[in-house]
Length: 274
Image (cartoon, rainbow, N blue to C red; front, side):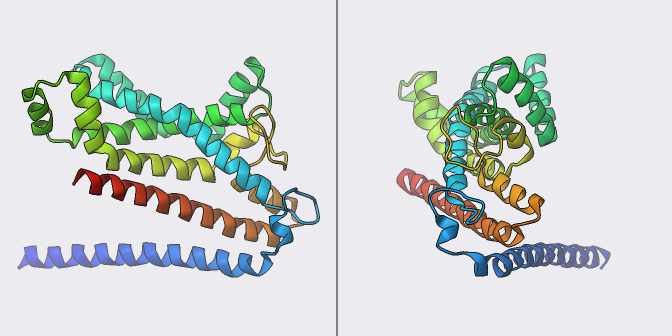
């Protein structure tokens, strides 16, 4: 009787927590849409930014550029690190334990600390100044632990029978990893990449110290603001609050499109494997 009562209470608490989370998410999204959609206009999507139109197009371009650059630096490093930890390293060694503790510690560091590090290391010491490259390198360090840990768990979830079957057919270790293990773990790896993309797109503090806040479509060594920074700057000035809400709507749409495309890609990979 007590066991059934406890089970019922825990089920009710779980349902209430899920409903509350969905309600909060729904409220936030609706609030942003109600506040921002009325202020979307043709001028808001002009090619060049001015103080009159507060165009979001340069920020959209910079957001895509920043995301691609950060992933180009972080994904290969994170994936190869995960492959080393799962497939090659001695799981009981102190080095592996140190790497995992370091990755978990880096995951909990505030973004402002990453921004200060990127400013001192990349902007000043390496002479990059306020540039997209300095921001991308900083963001790649920030998302590296996330990609590494999710990739490691995805590789661990691949059954050992996959590896044994590949070895039995005469494939070497490297070929087995690249042709069997990594493709089987790809949906989990892509989940980590999606989370990393969300962090890059929504970051402000680290990019303000490294990429800057200049409102134009920036080149690799130019200063530029992403959508999140653009929204923050507009709201902090206090003169374009309505445009800041409109930028938030665009940011939501961009994040939704990126997540949707990633989910479709993951589904396609799983379907091809099946």
